[in-house]
Length: 420
Ligand code: F6P
Figure (tube, rainbow, N blue to C red):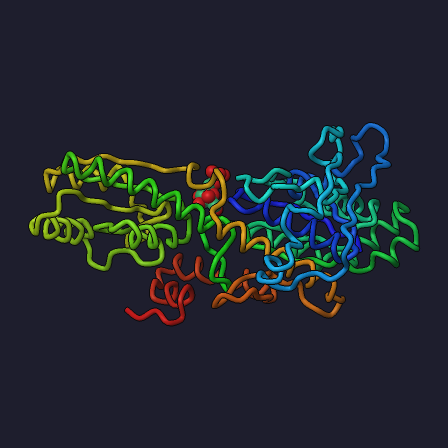
């Protein structure tokens, strides 16, 4: 089997660990590993613009056949680490071979060496307009078939995973169209009658249903906690208030967990706006009470997608004005922005993608036209496989509940055990 991996949508820490894991797991299972640069955009562009053809066959074959199924095996057998099994060599991807105009590239064991410590995504990501068009997807199908690739791993958020499932469901028609246009042979059409797809969730927001954690969320949370520690000491010194804006368009996970970890006084998240109107009174009352029992500093956390009960956005600057004007607090705003997204992955964002990448390759090897496309997740500390389409639908249901102002439903969809 030829397995290609791409990263799509907003980058997140741990995406490189996913690529590394999928590449190595594929090779260990006797498959060819390929990467697609620049997300779906790279699929659409393919290798047509490349100068000449590539004869490169990476030196990839480690000398054992059994693949460790679990973390303990990996550690005990030292089979997955960058250890003695690896040879020095010139990797196709990372060591100087020209990639100009080449978006779909075969890679070897050495190409992904050490990738799990790197932030962002080394194979690039893009928001592709082209892939959203039928012509774009036809070009993408052609480019995959041309390279003989029959399985695709997509690491991205819900939009990227929805795109993957649409692509798979359209695949037979795309193949038929390419055959009718004479772009592929009958043999190619038969060999590529089915595209196997698996999704891994890369998103700092932790906004995907049916998984407890998304890749990149632990690092982003860690980053926020460090920022809060820094803010807390200066806030304490001056007895100031800080309003901290964190990422999270439709999901308050980062804000909520940061509030718990950083000892915030008040919190705004999209799923549960403050219940009483005007919320300004509620916030001031709470903070006044905290101050009156001796707190020297105040921390209010605002998720970027926060709003009130009527869906009016709650902005950090406005919260600052309220704290200044009503409570007389010397207040500053800190917006963490993309510092939350970049940088080195924390341990969890190396371990989780490594285990999930292995599972993704296993899922592809077991897949057949009747099995759904799976999303690899983690639930109650176990790596899981759930139908991708169900997870995406449930995620969309949360956003819909918020838009319908059914906040209780939104919270219950996020956490079935949630009680008011
Ligand atoms: O979805 C991840 C995320 O980081 C959101 O939290 C944020 O709203 C968005 O991406 C920012 O996207 P961009 O990098 O395109 O500004």
